[in-house]
Length: 386
Image 1 (cartoon, rainbow, N blue to C red):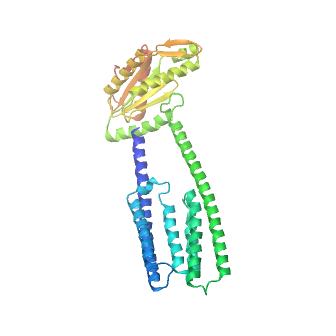
Image 2 (spheres, rainbow, N blue to C red):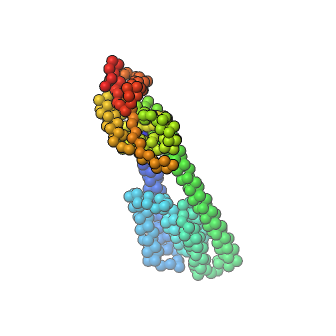
């Protein structure tokens, strides 16, 4: 258990590091965007001052102020990590609306180069394929089309002699159809992304379930033999490296075969689950490992626990089982008084100096407990047994 917690903390730290790197990239992009917008603001102000424009300078400065506030808000959200509360932490929709607004304004102020600026509208709209809301998928192309229409009107009012109605209509129609096409593609991409996200979540849930099943016993819900063997090796290496105590308690349910033969396997399974729950209520210290070892056998691994402490815990578990009755009501209605035998051993005590010896000596102590009349706790000692 201690190892699992270590792994979880490590995974969490890695996740936070990845999040910090992504967030820093967003901040860097926001800073670059601010510089680009700043250059755009300067160009728009100069074009308004030095060229005859359909818009007043005061109106342009008001628009720049709004865009400036938007950029400051974006930077604030990224810097304070508040953007992570949104479905799209990149805030793509907000940034796209801001960009399209300025592209449209540039076309209105500088209609003589409108054909070039239209290209940047396409670039902005292509970004709508990524992480935009359904509402934005419709509003972005509509906003772009309205911006181009206003630019055409501005062009006609400012340069009526240069305005080619046929050319501008064709340009407007091509642009409008293209934006609708981009919107359709973006909508398809959004649905596909949502579906892939759902599939990914299902795969993750399935993997988590498989991971749990690979570590847990299906009947009792305790850790299984495979998990115990893995953790036993890890805990033994730690105890050996640090010269710490490592205790083991082997538990065997008494007369289990007779219970199965007399009442059936369904009641026998119920007994195993009942005993597992009783043991789990007492073995709850972080780092301790309770597992079903096989059949009617259970095992407890106790890191940093002396043999004496493990022996006291085994006595406590035996007494708890003795004080309880297992009630079974199905084809028969019975109350069973169950008992269990316990074998205890400890690494670094009683000449137990290896991993295999710890397992073997705990099993020997259990065998002695069974052969001495069952419902007992025996601790391994090379010369005597408690």
